[in-house]
Image (cartoon, rainbow over all chains, first blue to last red; front, side, top):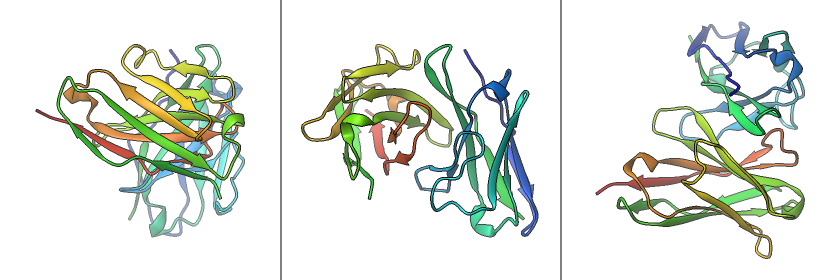
Length: 108
Length: 118
């Protein structure tokens, strides 16, 4: 089955840029989506289809996808961005949804 | 405004049955996918399955096949997740999710906490 790999944690200072990676076999051929989950809350879609932002998501959130890695980039990081971030794809080969293990973003 | 309103927290004993619900509003219930995601305490997201209420097309994760039933009643815009015999390992938060396509989940419910303990 298809596997998505994320680093467990990423730390960044306020105002800097955070890059959260999601690795998968030929992931560049798939459509990757990203969710933000703050403590005690349900996840929220922040990037879909590799790089599209849903309505209401700040422009500071952007995504890219190529080769074996997809990346969620958060510019000018704020304390309120501290959360767990999950990547997700729909694997058409197995006809199932796959989530990455999640990355905890800590704002120093 | 799209809303997914889930039923309240449940405390059950091992072996008991349970059916939790998720009522959708503010969108076309029969023309969107609605599904379930499990999150065990302190752990990540696990996709359980999804249903298209318009024609009842259902996809279930192999990890949950035979363990749960996913259904929907389009007359009341409500999706269900059902267990016939709960285990302690079913203790988790269960979120319903909605997607206009099968690809990703535009909206999430607030979650239903299920606790299974003797």
